[in-house]
Image 1: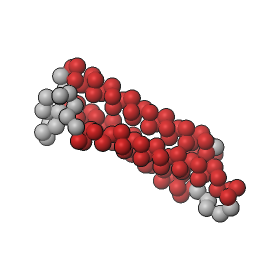
Image 2: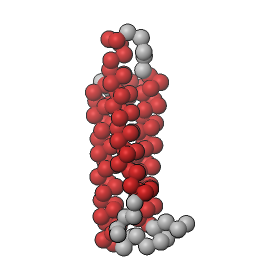
Image 3: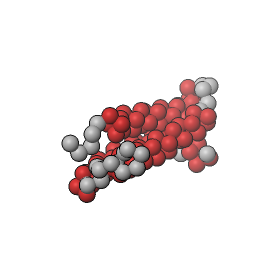
Image 4: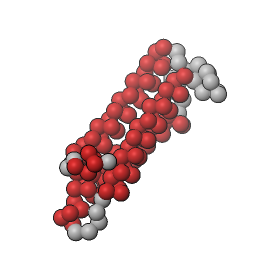
Length: 115
């Protein structure tokens, strides 16, 4: 992805954490609205509509961050420190944001939503 390679490492790391904050915000909004609107009743395949929405939001963000991380990793040159600094910063930011998104979404799998 040429656009990702042209962006400074700080911009990519910032984008990564904006995606994490988007996941965080949308998960909490979906929990709040789902509880208020009664989406917590069992729906398809034993899961509630709320759980499906939460899983979807979480999966889209994980997939997007994972794809960006893979592209960044492939584009990182591990040679001299000066050449590798920006790509390594981008890859590190994406990796940390992916881990943070994974961590903040774990309650979707483990906790009950409205009780």
